[in-house]
Length: 224
Image 1 (tube, rainbow, N blue to C red):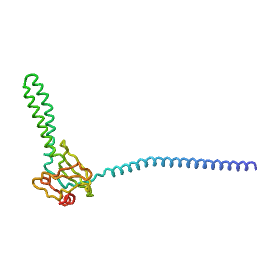
Image 2: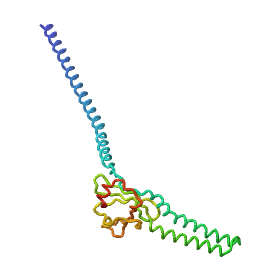
Image 3: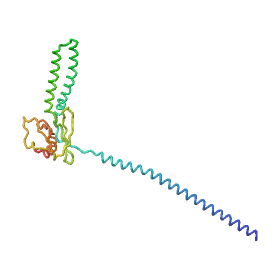
Image 4: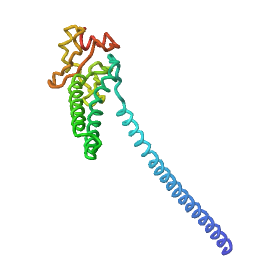
């Protein structure tokens, strides 16, 4: 009986050892699987977060980067000539500034007489004043008129005092078009576009020399 008892005890011991190994293996596998799933979840979260941020930034940038579309309804072919005339006084002023010191220096060395220096000064200053006065006639001459797709704003591209192009975006309701009731004649060099919001601002429109690209739209804004 002692031998059979020992055999039974040995068999029971093997069974317990086998069961213990299976339990340890299953626990280890479960722990590893949980760790792997956690790592995958963390990796996915890290990868997905920048993607969502980039998408939001791209969407915001594309929405903010939409530019309004403008349609040309009027243009003045002589606008380049008007801009060049406006810049003449700048060149005249630079030439006078250089000519006066040079002529004065030459008179000190006896190369030219003092009367010649006076003549250079008179010609330079008088020419500068004349060009400046005449440039006031060309100031704020409109070269192009654009209208947006919503037909509620116009963009006036005009020449400023220094001969540079300047754009002014104005609401259509802010345009003072009382002059449109009078038909331009050959003696009218230009018609003024005034603003209700700024009485001191006036743009000059040369209808006799310009080209109306979109007559219906132009008439709807400025009148017949």
